[in-house]
Amino acid sequence: MKDGPSGPLRAGWLDTPDPSRLAPDHPRRSEILARHARASAAGLSSYLDPATGYSVLTATYLAERGYCCSQGCRHCPWEGAEV
Image (cartoon, rainbow, N blue to C red; front, side, top):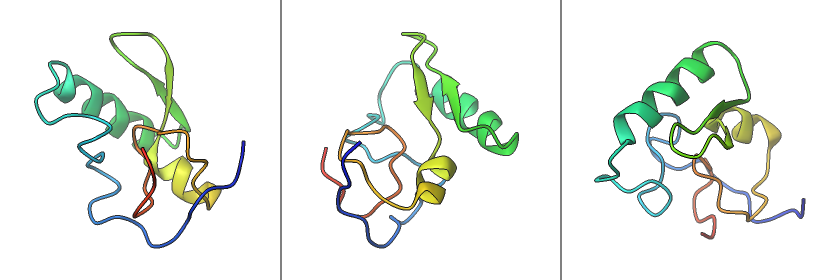
């Protein structure tokens, strides 16, 4: 991974993905956020996306990593990270 812009954490970073990464009207938003919350509470680094089966990194894991990789992660916690 390449290092990207890191900086302050976004407001609401732990519970709310940036709208450009998970639209407020996404049909499975509630299920996605519930899976993210369960994974974060369990200390897991990822969860499976209910639609695709892909592994999605949690905001906690990404924040603890300490930098943005500029790959458009759904739960990227960094303010100003590029999509």
